[in-house]
Image 1 (cartoon, rainbow, N blue to C red):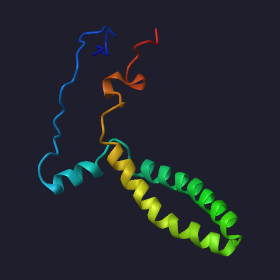
Image 2: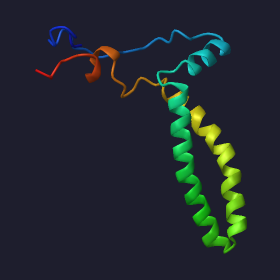
Image 3: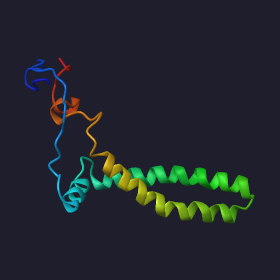
Image 4: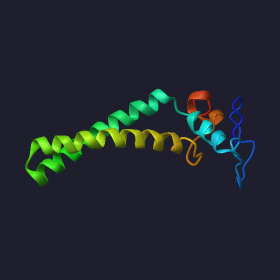
Length: 116
């Protein structure tokens, strides 16, 4: 742990367990998923840009396999709808996993440690 005021290391250790405040009912877990660390707008924006990339890939592969641009367009369009929703849900779930995420107090944008 780093003291945000002095930038001194104040503790070292291993986290053995993290208890979720949303443990319990399915409704509480769903509310925790919806209130993840990223905003909904950010998750939707990422879903759209990723889906555009994926759909172009799907279109090109389908066009190469079938030789039919209309059929390839239909395949790409149909997968946009399902995969955008799946990606959004995936992003919201991944935002709940603390692995690799910096605590707010240790994030470079929230303190001046290392910026002397």
